[in-house]
Image (cartoon, rainbow, N blue to C red; front, side, top):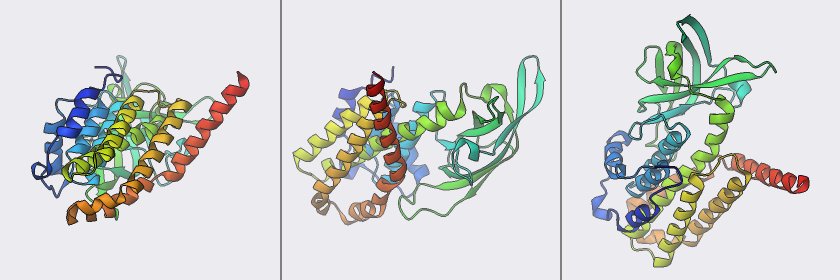
Length: 325
């Protein structure tokens, strides 16, 4: 199935006819919820539909976020299995800009066309590192002829010798989603584990947009579940389904397109407005659902400044294109 075919009718139907309140267990750990997610999403093929359905069967924002996050990684790296927990390892102490990446891949053996590398370094903040089966790691292989840090992406099994995960304290919101520092000490890597293309331009940079789209999908699925289970007005559900149709359309588009960034900015703005408009509806939910929502709502503000900068850059590119045209 192509990324443009998102089973839109099937996913919209699931949104309005999915599990009712008594049918969604209250899991206290992400690992136990993961099996529930796998069962619910198995009929859905594209990453965005799995993000949406995962959010719909989540009883809290943290699980909906995870559905979007792992779906975004699969959209970025199709080689990843649809049913494996994954984690992206980019940020280091100096940030995630190419010049800040110090983790390195060094060639140690070349024989009969097959290369062997050693991965060494540390990633400071990795989401779900302790539960992930595989890690997608950004590492430097040296410098380009222009003197820039040459970044490649490599797939690493979490259980590989030399990989160590140090848990970090939970965030004050979505505390079910774990984070950790990941250390790589002379981890043996085979050539086939390297992903093709430029690590930064083809993976790290577009992931910011891809993650937004898919995490928004997970959150919209979660909100639709709340709206259906607690009998919010039909107009609220209609608005949510319209937003879901929009996020499905964006999911298969070029993440580098300035027009896509502008549309995504509009989608995000509309989501925030919708949440303000329906704030009183949360009074219809139970105490647990309402308190977790209030606790986790700060997630919506994460990376807000970076998102605003990307939107500004998109508008600048559009204006420059109009002037040149």
